Length: 420
Image 1 (cartoon, rainbow, N blue to C red):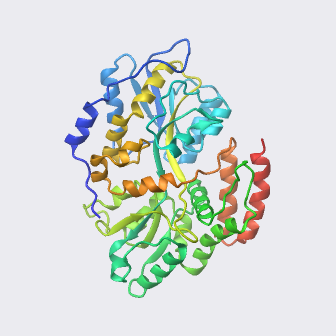
Image 2 (cartoon, rainbow, N blue to C red; image 1 turned 90 degrees about the vertical axis):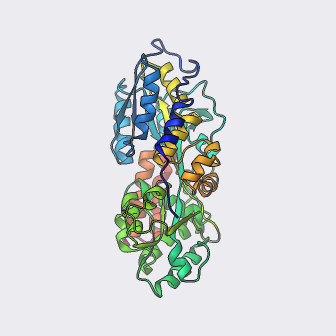
């Protein structure tokens, strides 16, 4: 499956059409209103995001946007944003938030309610990640869900004509391929960081369980939750998951898959473009496919990812901030960014847009995964909750605790962390 990067002429045309619209002023009401603003966001490696910002700046000389790069790791991004908010810093006007940070920033009044934001046209699961107690505090921008990357050539050679939809099928397929090929079977992200929370949430959900129930209380004392964690711990014991995967974050796993070391790999949509590059950097270019994740008894449940954009409660130019958010999350700007960077976007129409699907053929599969995805625990004290999940899960994966002990301890720890 060969990925083709979009032609510059196509990207330029999209940037030129419709990206100068700024919208009406409505929304956040403050005394200063308009002026230059600063956007704190992750460092985007393709340079497309800066082109989007430059397009705004060329048509808005009085309200230019300065793009500030946050640290690479999500945990460090959150720490920097929280520290700025705690001292009521005016350094940032627009901030990029991980989809699970909304409750924390809204409850602490660090993010301004997005009054006047048109919520039509967004993927519904992505839209919900920007809401707190029914009100929008962040606009959906990037989205995503976990996907299964698999080697089409090796499956075909073993007489397998479709990707697995259950964990047992994944195990059986791996055994067939390994009869003639020495290769690692499956890996996600199991280092002790935010990606581990994502993967554990995914495994538990794919077994029919949940970390928190509908009322927000811990729900880890169930057979389903145990089956989910056991899929990971047993996989490490029996060799389904290679031992080095205990150190994998997204990039480690991506590189292993691209080097031909893995038959199946769980990762995000951005991997598609990189693994498909035909410049020799990927050994699997043209030899892999993308599918929804498998689960315990049928198709699995991905963890919803993504990034939203919000207005800092301490911004002095909130009207400009709102206008810029409308611009950057608009369909034309999202299409330009998606074509140039291969990041999956939050606008529903882009998943059937001919230009987008031609450049990124996996988009229809991703759309299905997003619609069926579940979020990580949505709590105000998310930092403490994710740290507790990582601590318990890592101990189980390393064999320092049994899955039963890990879940029992986590159940007890999450009680006070999720209490209203």
